[in-house]
Amino acid sequence: MKILSIETSCDETGISIIEVKGTKNPTFKILADSLNSQIKIHAQYGGVFPALAKREHQKNLPILLERTLKKTKLEKNKNPFDLIAVTSGPGLEPALWTGIVFAKELSKKWNVPLVPVNHMEGHILSVFGKHKKTFKISKIKFPALSLLVSGGHTELVLFDNLGKYKIIGETLDDAAGEAFDKVARMLELPYPGGPEISKLAEKERRKIILKGAPQCDGTRTEQIFQQKNCDPFKIDFPSFSLPRPMLFSKNFNFSFSGLKTAVLYLIRDLKEKNPKVLEDIKIKQAIAMEFENAVVETLVYKTKKAIEKYNIETLIVAGGVSANKYLKKEMQKLTNKKQILCFPDKKLSGDNAIMIGIAGYLKFIEKNKKGTNHKNIKAEGNLRLN
Image (tube, rainbow, N blue to C red; front, side):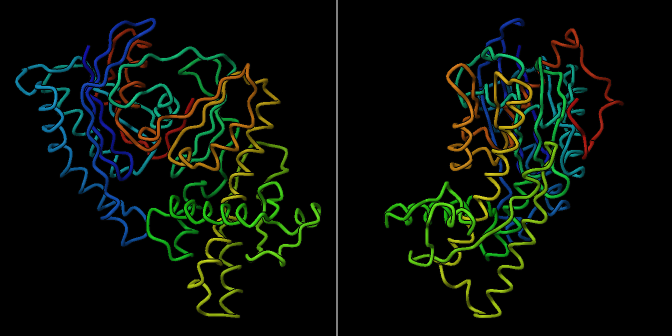
């Protein structure tokens, strides 16, 4: 069967066409995939502006559909698809509605079933996808744990079967991705800020290694320097200490708002001594690295504790922030040879329609090959996994 999948949860307009064979161990083949990014449009605002995102989705969806159909030569078919999958949440509701309305119109036009998809489940299943390749959903061992770190979400999700999830930890305020973008604005870096912070942080780490300086377990805190008999002031870089929020709380929740505020106060204090302090690349790199260290150490520590408590056999790390090289490196230390560790292909770590197609098909099979009543499909900005 052929599936048309649509993704419009935030600022990426995605349309994919996937061919699937089989039900118990299905084979997926990507026939075409189109993605339009709105980064340049939202860059001037330092973040996604919902009304603009909605407008761009409305403009891009018909264009992307035509382009995608031409890639597969399906535009000549009266009924080119057997199923349509569309993101229904979570995300920006104005953006979600554009995709849902578009999908409903196509579903009625071609008289094919329509399945709403949870965007976060899409991220979990993205680790099985292969961009422009044929793939199967590889067998994983249960219980499984997924750390989801997309732009607006930071969650630890426990599951014993695909499709049945339990959130055991989540952010109480800002998500990790949001914190990266907000701190990047403080550092006067371009949007999106996450990759920019990571570039600066990586340069700082390389500089420390080249100078033969002790890395002190990957942190820049004064406490660690003291424990390792390191003297940061004898090394050619400034030293900053930022908090590791909720690191030792008795649950698996996260909080990054306080960390973001700590960076704000740090920059404020530095500017009081030197108003042009952010023109110094050494300062920017040092702050970027300490901030990234704080986020990654928190994510890794909480994930490690969850793995130990629930005897996890498979760890899935997914979402846009999963592309962070330092996070990936530190997460790889958490599993042994008997455990499975999964990351998505870099091209599938961000929002995309391929992961929506995978999730949509599995949901369709679970529902005995039945779609969802159009009246019951709505945009749910705060939709949760369950």
